[in-house]
Image (cartoon, rainbow, N blue to C red; front, side, top):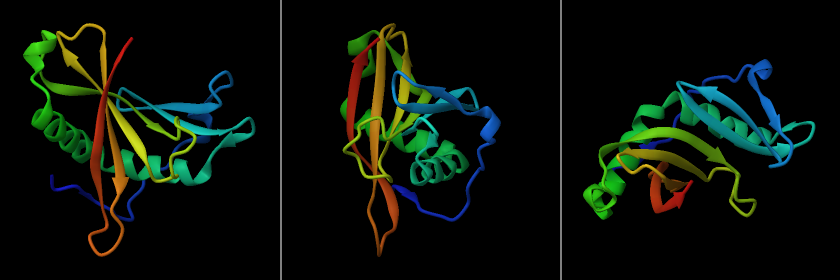
Length: 142
């Protein structure tokens, strides 16, 4: 895995586009057909996680490609009656409360895998590489 280089570019989030999901303790917005979910409080999303969401939105194609490469190393789509590539469904920032603010999960679906939602967890490497790498995948039934 090459990882995705950390950078300064961010896509700002229009505050008017945020919707509060009170039952989940999160805030959500749509970006390029995907739902971005950011943990927060009733008065707004966590600002550190929202900043990471802006970075991921700016490099979304790279993260989806990295997630596809990672899943392809471990998963045979035909075993799930599916065919690749995995397609973006959403990105979650802080859904797991114990995650550091820079950790997130890219959520993907596989054509033919009717009830499967695949997640690829990314974490930052820190200096000197300063990249985000996939470290774990999961599959949820939905």
